[in-house]
Length: 270
Picture (tube, rainbow, N blue to C red):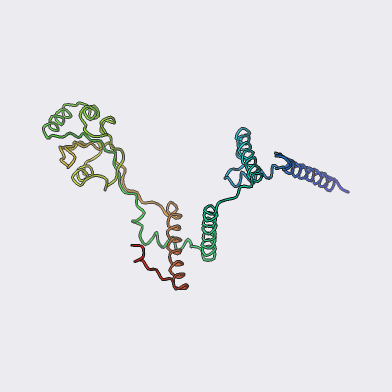
């Protein structure tokens, strides 16, 4: 037997020892409650069902989850001893959950048999790229008071170089008073027309004249502008795919209504 073969059998033997050790460890009782034992494998399956992965946790987290696992198993044992059963109402709820899982599995089966292709997704994107534009938004600050005379006085102070933020803190009659008039980043369609028309006509750093709205008299400043941006195909690919899948599911539903001759009497739920 040559050296390569000897090395191969030694390595194989070592691997089998490791596998056997790992198997023994996974089958070794981790928790014992009365005459019932739970192994590391049981615990790992529990972690999997709760969305955790053992390999991504430190020992402290594992210990806390093991305590949670233990607590659950203790109560399960107590439930069995006490002969506790789920109620009829709970059974209905479980049946409902089961139905939802079955529907989910059915839809996933249909979609997997005829998946949405990248070509279909690309066609949607290329046909209406304007739907995937991030609109322009602006960082806006304002001063708002309830009289035109007060607004004129503030405007004069601004022209003299007094801080916009300080004047907003001293005079604002809305919730932005504490924030120095800061309205944050906003797009069109948020404010009333009179306010929006002026706010989106100013350049970065510009201050408006007095703007009257139903809420009072405003002086507006644009602190920053982020222009509109076309979202790339990779950015929206999954979003378009989900919409196409939703459309396909609706088509399936309509087909099933015809197949099963579904009749709905909406008059009974008026």
